[in-house]
Image (cartoon, rainbow, N blue to C red; front, side):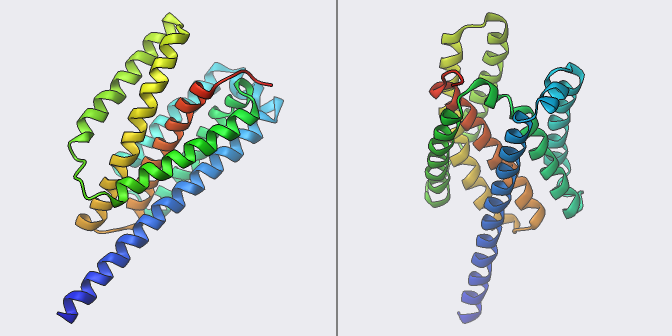
Length: 228
């Protein structure tokens, strides 16, 4: 019985270490993104380079997509140092492209929305971590909602409807809150069933990072307002 208890304690410690690592790397990614976004927004030269040249801007966008797909599809084949480098590079590139929010919204709005988003994320992720309810069935429903948001957003690029944009944002908040809960529980289950490893923590951090960023952007559109 004592041996079983020791093994259980070791497993719990490994799982907790994995979860802490996920949140730590997520925080690192968000901090880098925020710093780079603010730095780029404060530099007219960098703004001109990134947003004055469509080739550079779309190159960054496709580069970000490529990094996400590489990490998601090849995480087991990558070296730990490579996975970390790609994750950090993604956070930096995303910060560069997200610097537009400082041109579109007042800094007070960005700050207040960040704190609202942080509180919402903490509650949602905490629920996903602590709930005993199996949320597996939510996955397909949330994925369908995500696809719907993408399609509606593309359509609205041509329609240019502010009302439709607001509806998409409200639905987006619900979807990304749900994804935060679902992804958190999935990471916890993965740590228990497959074992915790440092590369898995990077992928987990990327997943929650994306949930947070998208939730923040949806909330920012709702809270909105022009730049002071």
